[in-house]
Length: 177
Image (cartoon, rainbow, N blue to C red; front, side):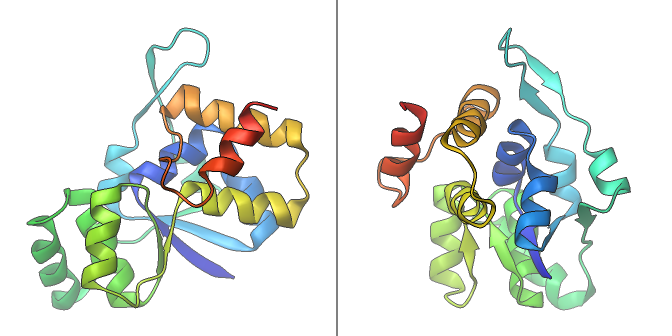
């Protein structure tokens, strides 16, 4: 089972589509977040009104679909402080934990992912489209289900991949089908 640490950006996208448990089951992945990401992942848009509404991730934590990984030891603490000079706190803590424990990291923020790639070239990064593409292939999702996932993410989390993303054309093709 792969342990995948998530930044708030990816976590909110997966929560918007309500697909985290399905992805975990299909890919045999364990999702994890750091405490700062838990504290950041508080609100998504209501699909019908567009208003921001609270998100409750406690059931995902209690059911085991989502683990909380605390900073551990002086090395991670130091790494976190160093990274927080360059990127936001949740991203900094996620990068520190992933790097120190040799975990893979799911992150959509372009500045933070560019920084992480430059600073820690061995750190494997995942984006929302990459995770969903892997899941879609593994679970043989229908175009209709995939479209529902993408529309939910676009409406509730206000995310769509940048045009420069390798899977942007795929994403756009599915949403327009």
